[in-house]
Length: 83
Image (cartoon, one colour):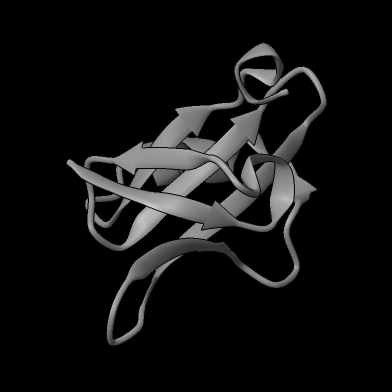
C-alpha cells in the first residue's frame, strides 16, 4: 500500500491510500465525476497530485477499463469521509 498526502481536488489536504504506486482514480458515481491522482515524487516527499483536466465526466466503459488497470487503483468517493 502507498499512502501519501493529496494535492488538489476533493481530497486536497487529506491523506489517501492506493494499492498501486502510480496513483488512483477517484470516482463519484452519483455526481458522474472522476478525478485522477498521480504520484509525484520529489527529493524529500511523494504526493498524490490531481491530474490537470480533472474532474472529468464519468464514463461506464472507461470505468470498466480503469478497474482492470494494474497501475492505478480505483476508489469510490465518499463525501462524508472527506468533508
